[in-house]
Length: 576
Image (cartoon, rainbow, N blue to C red; front, side):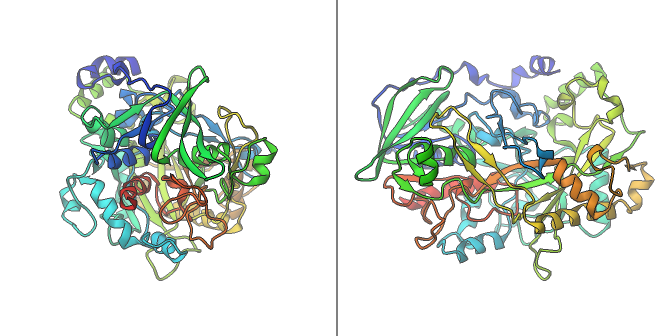
């Protein structure tokens, strides 16, 4: 399927793997070195290189963004490939059935914005008011809203006209998904019939359901690489972008505590080949897994951890702690036996590929996942619009037909007859941590998310499942032939289907990370002993070193994190 698709589509794309890379030489000097070309790092490099006199180096461990990832239907294709770091959590009793969970993270220009579902949500006003109340000046909602807007090029006229919350003309195209299949429309109609419709969850009211806004341009994904780097990469001579190079440590003078550059290695050969120097600052934008790992490898982190692996302690900070992650678990399944074909015949597939030449049809969307809504659990404030659960459906093939499907994730989004309901916990109380057990920069860090260790998280996820069961009473599901599959999952057969104990069993044994880690380089004021960076994102006790990505969040936002990461990257210029 993929090869046929590329044959048809190649006339519309440039193959960036053919680009001749600029070769870095040992000893080069730059004003700024940005480590990591992900959701935040691409934006940081764009903003800093606006100043002609500043030389900026952007270093990415992965390679060029694959051209096929521009196609929304291939959203799951990259998991466990070379553009995924392929992280796994550490086995923990009571979560993921005691086995490792998969934690996909983008390893390519654009980072996880190349792998994600593209949905664009900024979080709730209260999220940022809470940040500010913790002593983080200039991070309140009214402070950060302009930075969301400055990056945005909103392509939906009915949304863009609300100039209080939206704008046009920025680098990042934001648009609702343009195509919806029949099942997607039915799901949205059911929620609207129940009074849960909302026009724009990024504006005045967050609660409710709609076709989601996305980092999307007329049927194509817009990663931060495509939005912020490609338009300037061959134009700004003061910006150099290097791929397939890993930063193994930040160079810090142990006496002056001044960061002055980075040590680099070839990603493929794993051989260290030199150092590159920063005359002003090093900015770490590796994300909530890689940023704390790099700081610890550089001598910044919990002293006990660093001493155990033989790394000289330069600054004792709570790096890697405060890990927060949105989580969910496989819920119940709905089947609709009379809907569509169980797998697209070759001619139908070719037709859909031809449709996508005009950026329409099932290749231009993410199926039922494009309908997303926000609701409140028992723990959300009763008198405020501050939901703590996100609700979604994931389209699948009926299990009895899977032997016919091959690589299911490569089939277009409207060829399915089963949907799985997911409630996502968006304001978790549980806290985990990331650590290292080796000084080898090529060893994966150890990830302990500690999902559902706080009972309030289990109570909230139960509310999410019960909400989903309530929605099934809507006549639209019965009228269109949807049926609830009441077959119990294997590890939970001892519990009554739909009971609280059953949902707790599901949460603990069928856990599914939402791939939104945050908080591992916590931002906080000087008196906060758990803080790693100050409100200007400077690493405490180290000069010339900042962190700019989702790891700086003191508390995770009540939303998908890509938009927030872009905002964090955009704020960097205000500090110079």
